[in-house]
Length: 309
Image (cartoon, rainbow, N blue to C red):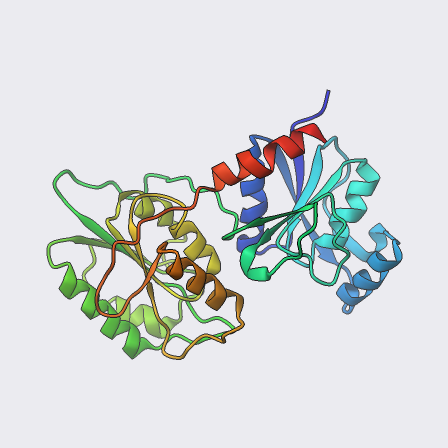
């Protein structure tokens, strides 16, 4: 009997690991999570070469995994792909990766790739419009009867942009002026700069989660209960969550400088805005509450293929 359990390899990056876990949850499979690391500096470049030569060895990486019976090895992130294929071959199971594995051969058993990565049209590639995620509210906030809510999600600096405290404050003041009778929930992220956090503490939010003080994730609850959700334009993971769960209208706060035209997050935001899944906040708001159902995509394109192999 085929086991309904997956081996998930982690590179330690939540945005990657959570996508692999989401894959398991949409399938309804159990999973074991093990960290993996390339052993030496330059190991990634060597892994590209060995993969193209069809040579797979555990000597190139370290992991806590020992043995087990699995339907597939699943992972996301370039630091995991060589180990994924190596362990899948040893275990005699499928190799499945989330995100396009650039630099490696594309002949994994299944690749779940985001549209903004411009994946090629191959039989083993399933293209999805956003990052893979699986939202589970935790009850970290409880709306009170008769109250109405908006939520603010504040990210942080990224390789494409740095947050502008004065611009963000101006945007927050505009938002609060539009919703004077609403309760306001706010959360920062692990990447939020100290200067931004200091500015935020000058406001009296109905509920404020500062990750530096309280490392929890209220975003699923905010998505479930808010009428409007405002978030900074620095995280494809946060944006993907916002447009795939709940009933809230999604507003993205533009950064001080334009994002690089060819950057993945710029492509993602522009496509979602064009299709009315979100609105770029310009001092006014829109009613962009359309949602992408990742569950439907799984049921149509992945579940039957996975179960029948």
